Image 1 (spheres, rainbow, N blue to C red):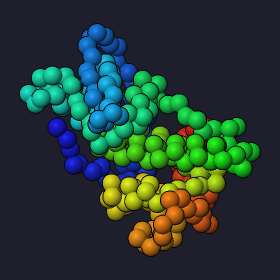
Image 2: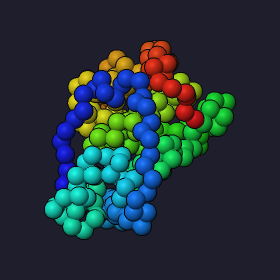
Image 3: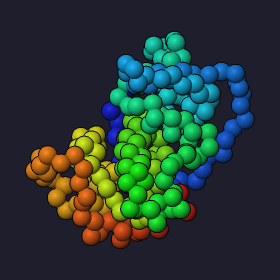
Image 4: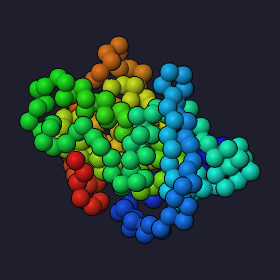
Length: 225
């Protein structure tokens, strides 16, 4: 079961909605299973059904329906990677997730190639997490992820590879917060995706990135390391 519903951009770029009050577990032993990825990269995750259903209306409808997900209490997600879903799993329980990136680890180490590569890889995962959260209508996770992305752009010099740009362009609609992030924060040549040559990685001009991200962060709550 899947959904093509796209939430209005303003719903995911406004101030974060108040954290909903968590209900006590009514069925603490009731779990649902997510099979994520394909082939050798496939992994299985289990989440309390109540937690999953409270965070996503899509999952709530699926697991309480007569569809295959409702009958098996299993949801297959083949269009993302386990490392992306792992962050989502952490977030639904903790309202945050573990990152390599932090101001302390990156601010004074941008000449360290390993740090740069790790930040780039983590950025790719975060872009895919935002798209995954949109697919399942988890707006608070979209806001949280965007604040993390903006904080990374403010703290670190923004490196973004062309595949990430194309991924964002193909998986977002005009006016979405993530597309605006890529377009406004990193490049004035967003539309010229086919003219970037053969280089796998580009150090993109970011004349406006700090102003854009700092303004976005001011609209949110605290910075996220």
